[in-house]
Amino acid sequence: MELLIKLLLLVLTALKTTQGSDSCNEVKHGHGHPYLHEASSFSQAEEEGFDYIIVGGGTSGCPLAATLSRNYSVLVLERGGSPYGNPNISHMQNFHIGLSDTSPSAPSQPFISTDGVINTRARVLGGGTCINAGFYTRASQRYVKTVGWDAKLVNESYPWVEQRIVHWPEVAPWQAALRDGLLEAGVAPFNGYTYNHLYGTKIGGIIFDKDGFRHTAADLLAAGNNDNLKVLLHATVERIIFERRGRRRRPTAVGVEFKDNSGKRHRALLNGGRQSEVILSAGAIGSPQLLQLSGVGPRKELKKLGIPVVIDNLHVGKGMADNPLNSIFMPTKKPVRQSLIQTVGITHPGVFIEASSGFSQSPNSIKCHHGIMSAEIGQLSTIPPGQRSLEAVQKYKREIKKNLPKEAFQGGFILEKISGPLSHGGLRLVNGDVHTPPVVTFNYFSHPEDLQRCVYGVRSIERVVQTKRFADLTVNDAYTMEALLNMSVQANVNLIPKHTNDTASVEQFCRDTVTTIWHYHGGCHIGKVVDGEYRVIGAARLRVVDGSTFNKSPGTNPQATVMMMGRYMGVKILRKRLGRAAGV
Ligand SMILES: Cc1cc2nc3c(=O)[nH]c(=O)nc-3n(C[C@H](O)[C@H](O)[C@H](O)COP(=O)(O)OP(=O)(O)OC[C@H]3O[C@@H](n4cnc5c(N)ncnc54)[C@H](O)[C@@H]3O)c2cc1C
Ligand SMILES: *[C@@H]1O[C@H](CO)[C@@H](O)[C@H](O)[C@H]1NC(C)=O
Ligand SMILES: *[C@@H]1O[C@H](CO)[C@@H](O)[C@H](O)[C@H]1NC(C)=O
Ligand SMILES: *[C@@H]1O[C@H](CO)[C@@H](O)[C@H](O)[C@H]1NC(C)=O
Ligand SMILES: *[C@@H]1O[C@H](CO)[C@@H](O)[C@H](O)[C@H]1NC(C)=O
Ligand SMILES: *[C@@H]1O[C@H](CO)[C@@H](O)[C@H](O)[C@H]1NC(C)=O
Image 1 (spheres, rainbow, N blue to C red):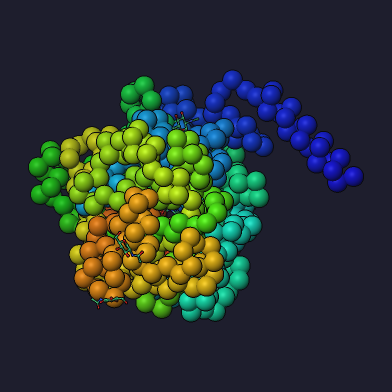
Image 2: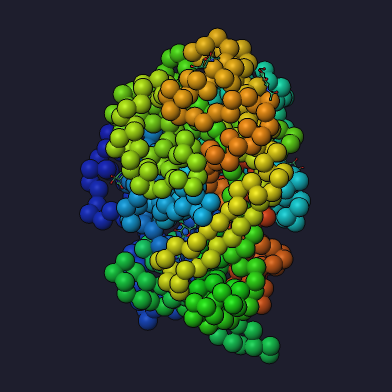
């Protein structure tokens, strides 16, 4: 009977898909999305003006928009397209394929920080949740307290996200091995399946369902009120429009200017309501970039670029950080199944241990890859940061990969990411055009404590590698670091330090092999660029709600908290305006 129903559902789904629709912005998966429109279809003349204009339909922007649309009109402007119907986004197996697509319309936009580390920014409705590795895990209680959030509302906001898009993984073999290896190496206790941030080893949530189908922040828009919600795709916001109003003649946001795909410029305006607002959720690079383009930033830098200064603030785009990622490849006797992140070890010194495995077949196959550490997505950890380039990635794809021995793909990676970090950098505009990527610097390991923690992380990986659990999986019975080095040199996938008892050599390893786990944050810090309510200091009717406001990346991986924050701020704003009548 159950089988019959399943079959029937399959047939129905197939029918729905074949009926399809001629627009690629319509959804192929499940229900439609009536609020999605192309930016080119927009005409301010036909609009009344909006209660809220949200710039960036990403990880925080989507839950925020859905929540505010319950009671107010909301316009979301997203520079990318729709995630629906794109298999590069929707299928877990395509993680590395999607990320290696560098065409101008692709959902990820690569950049290289001045540190020489290849990185990427999301450019699609749903933001980072459409291209990320999908691991879902909350911030610690201490983090929530330090930021000053209302812990009860935080506890209500995470489940709002979880019920809609988060799943428990079927633990993949490589992730099970890491779980057991961590416990054997003393990263204990085992905390089971949990979203919570607890010392020891745990299995977290993922945004992929049992079929490996990705659910994203864009799906959260379906929780909004369709009558109040409008989302424009391929709408690149160029600047915030300010007027000087009120007794103190504070710069007041009244709308934004944006371009559609054909390059045509539009204006979207607030409706003039006293509490209407422009809210930036353009991400850790997009939000400080847009503030500066709009004249909110360091006077000297803006003047040099000919941008009229609206608010002089030295801190915009400063204090940005990216958590350094270092990893070790473990060759195994047998092929391991592909897995992104499911297991994490949370250590007291603030080092998080995770794992990823790719797919081994013939190195000539596009299917053959290294999961999160795939060189074709820019994780060129075999080349020191200064020498990495997008050309080097192409060369890897064309020449190097083909000549690697099969063993180089048979195995998995153990990764370590440090909490914080304490090393900071920032971004600088090159010109006044939103399409020119800002120059970004993270200064990895410039703070000695970050380097110490990396050394601790690499040594922790060594302990895991030497457990009985891993010895059984790997080619030699027990791996010494030297043996691993030998193996890896042959396979050309690692630059492993010769002796992990030699701190200087591990430090060098940390610097030489540093890559990113794409958790960069900061640029619009609380107390410096925004106040405790995320209002831009010195401006009216303008907020920033996204990862650019973080001092430190939350949890072991940030997306849970970024989405939570969108929901949380939406509820806060509704409650403030409507009191109990908000009903949330
Ligand atoms: C490859 C990768 C893997 C990751 N893996 C994980 C993981 O496994 N687990 C985890 O927790 N985190 C992971 N992360 C991190 C996490 O996804 C991000 O921290 C998070 O998505 C950032 O959210 P945000 O809202 O700050 O920005 P985003 O989600 O990037 O949203 C910003 C949005 O604004 C849009 N935008 C920017 N500028 C403009 C403009 N001028 N006009 C209009 N729109 C604009 C962008 O197109 C984007 O959609 C990963 C990230 C990446 C890239
Ligand atoms: C806000 O929206 C909710 C859900 O639609 C509704 O129940 C509530 O009455 C609304 N509140 C006001 C004040 O309009
Ligand atoms: C998926 O990515 C590949 C390259 O990595 C690209 O060639 C292809 O066009 C992408 N598909 C879609 C639907 O964007
Ligand atoms: C929030 O949830 C956490 C974890 O479940 C719990 O420990 C904490 O006491 C809760 N806080 C509040 C204020 O409810
Ligand atoms: C590593 O390789 C070197 C040189 O080929 C060899 O002398 C050494 O014994 C090897 N060490 C291990 C542990 O395999
Ligand atoms: C590190 O340990 C190895 C083997 O355990 C030893 O041969 C080597 O001399 C040690 N190196 C240092 C710098 O202590």
